[in-house]
Image (cartoon, rainbow, N blue to C red; front, top):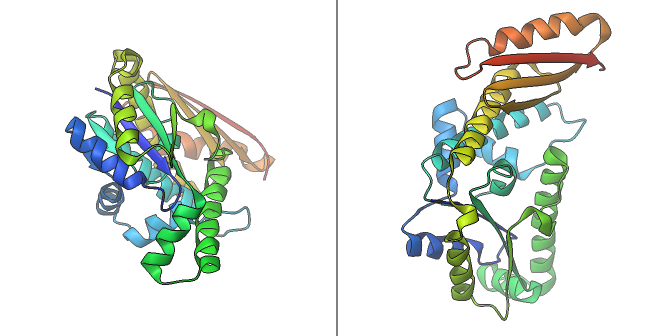
Length: 265
């Protein structure tokens, strides 16, 4: 069966849609559970993991490598959840973490800004201006995180299969449309989709292992073949290549390894 990811702006009814879709389909509905699982497995406080996905790492952030490693922890935990299928995920960045997986229905939930502002005003007892500023700040934080790590704007509609605006369309109407999409043949689980999930899981394991080295790198896995591209000063390129290979030797599932280290900082 397909997997569903629901991306949402703050206070856009995305959580409500996710929970109702999961109830209708008898799927597991997960969000914070992924953070808790990653926290338990990798022995990292949940607050640090949450910070890693809420505050974008910058080029001058001394903790940037650590944050990227924490993001790899979260992705690894999510991939373990969704490999069983029958999951609705409405936590942060599911559409990025699973963007290559064909049996994922990627949904973006929008809501009218005025409606979102009224929700915050009622919840927090703040003024219109304060509520609008809070929403703007939260949305921009998520945008900067996505751009920093993936070079993608979460508002880009091409990232999604469905973009639903909760205005004239009700929450129940959105649930109905998502459930209909889940039943379409193009989103059903296939052996090819399972292979893609395995490759993504392998990439996450590689990111976790290389995160200990504190280097800039890119990784791609396809059917067990892993390619790593990194940068290092000219005089340290061979050393870094050796460290990368040694770090990956014990990872189960790597059938072939290709490592390239280019001149750089």
